[in-house]
Amino acid sequence: MADFEKDDMDMEEEPVVVMTDEEGNEYYYREEVIIPVGEKKFAILVPINIDEDEEECGCGCGCEEEETDVYIARIDIDESGEEIYVDPTDAEFDEVRQAYEDLLAEEDDEA
Image (tube, rainbow, N blue to C red; front, side):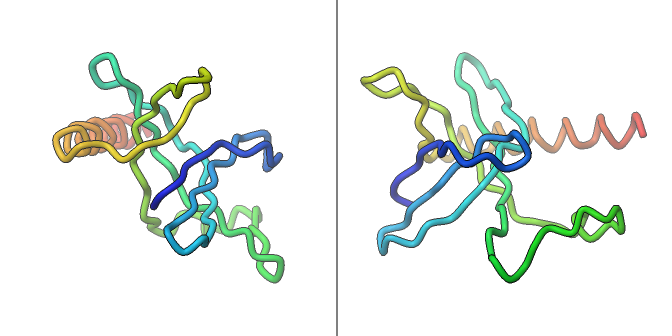
């Protein structure tokens, strides 16, 4: 995906990350968690379905618990001081994936 930006959209008080691919298609994500690795920060981004015909359920039926692909992005600061999302290196990706899996395992153990 080419461009990453935080949008001002107000969806459940969470920032919405808009990614635009090379063809101009926009994809919407929310930050699931920020994971620090070394001195860098990485965001685990979860897709948001922004389809006017299909609303999020919110009924507690467990439908939101279906497996979803997540996106890992490194959070950098651009020249103007704004946070931007960039693709991590392969090594960074592996480190963050492991840290995220460890975090999920800890949450499962606590439940």
